[in-house]
Image 1 (cartoon, rainbow, N blue to C red):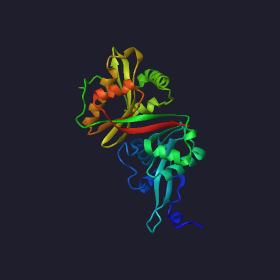
Image 2: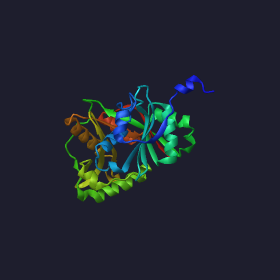
Image 3: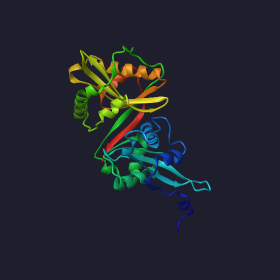
Image 4: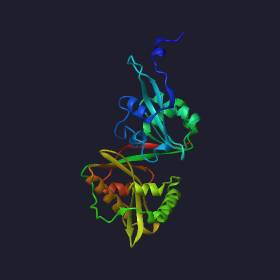
Length: 287
């Protein structure tokens, strides 16, 4: 006999969902500012919904259950977006059971290579689904934010947007970054340059450091991939590039945030010097 409490318990159903439906049907409190909410996942979903360049490579999935209203509206309490070209994905859940159902489904039906997730929801979902043993590598990401008026390094204006002629140097940056951080990300530099997303700082006519502007959902803007070429290290190049970038974002009315591996001590020190403060954790796992 089925107990009454089992009849009331939602049965989570995982599957593909349109970005528009996810935005409309997300459970209350799903899209919150970081670190409680997944800023980067929300950015991708909103980009998909408006048909932004490159968004066609992404697909959205969710775990939904019938809500309490008479119309039977499905509410999404876990979401997973996957780039089917690269295998990179993002995950967030407000209900561990929904998260467990979605992860178990995704690993079989739309498997990721790498997942960026809000920390506790991923840990709880992996545990409930019994999937922790399938994680082959993982690490914590510090969520850092620069408070309004918190810029501690005066910008010097010595930076610029990358140009098409910089692509050979950017390819070198991509290769060295992957070697040092043991990852395998890549960018379409033509697309990123056209989007005015790549910032560089030069010394003696040679690009010394780089960063990439990432997700933007006002009032927050993010960046990542901060890198200084080995021959220019120890001179504060990345620190100054970050300071200049943050000053530009402030002029646009945007606060700045980022994620950084918690074992990347030089980068953490540089961000703290600029004025960033640690406000929480995310987690990256590899399957």
